[in-house]
Image (cartoon, rainbow, N blue to C red; front, top):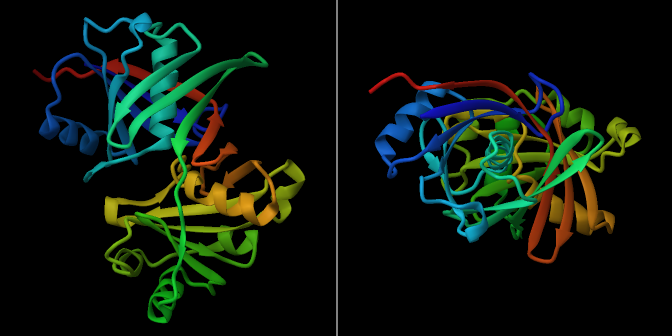
Length: 280
C-alpha cells in the first residue's frame, strides 16, 4: 500500500495541517485502517479506494474514509484536500475534477492552476447553527478554554465559541480534560473571532479548533470547521467570499465561497513524503 504525507492548506512544507494519504486497492479492512492511522499519529489519515477497475472518465466516485489516531470520522477537509492533491500528483486523476463517495455523501474536488501552483476547491456541505442558552455549559466552556465567551452555538457535532478578539484566540491555553468533558454531544470546540491584525492580510476571521474527544487536542487547520464558521461570519460580515486563518502553531489559510447549503473551500498542498508499508 502506497502512503503519502501531505501538508494541506499551505504552500510551504511544515506548515498547514499534515495528513497521511493511503492508496487502497483491496476491500476496506477497518481494523487495519485504524491501526495504520494510530501508527501515523497525525490528526487524520485518509484511505482512498483506487481499485484496478476504476477509470477516470467513467464518472464513478472514489471511496474515501478518514481516521484519527483513535476513531473514524464522517468528514475531514484537510485530508480530502491532501487526497485530491496526491491523486493529481500520481497521475491517477488528470482532469479538472474528482469525486469521492464518503459518509457525508458525494464530495467533489476541482483543480485550477494558479501562479505555478495547483489550487484545489472542495465542495462541502454547510453546517447549520443553533444558539446555546445553557448557562452552565457556557461556564464549563469558559473554564475549559480560559477566557470569556460572547456567544455559544452548536452545530450537529461541534460547539462554536465566539470570543472578543484575534489576540484572545491566539493566546488560548485550554485545559484538555475539562474541554473533553465539557459537552457529551460535541466532538470538538471551535473558538473564533473577527480578524484583528490579520485583517491587513485580507483575513476575515481567525480560529483555533480543539478535538480532544477524538484524540486530537488541537487540529492545525480544520477544513470542515470552516463549513461551520464560514456561514456564521458570512452572515455577520455580509460577505459570500471570505478568508479564514487558523492560528495554530503551524497555521494555515482557507479561502471560502458560500453557496446556499454548500461551502467551497480552496487551498493548496505540499507532499513531504511518499513511501509504502512493508508489513504483510
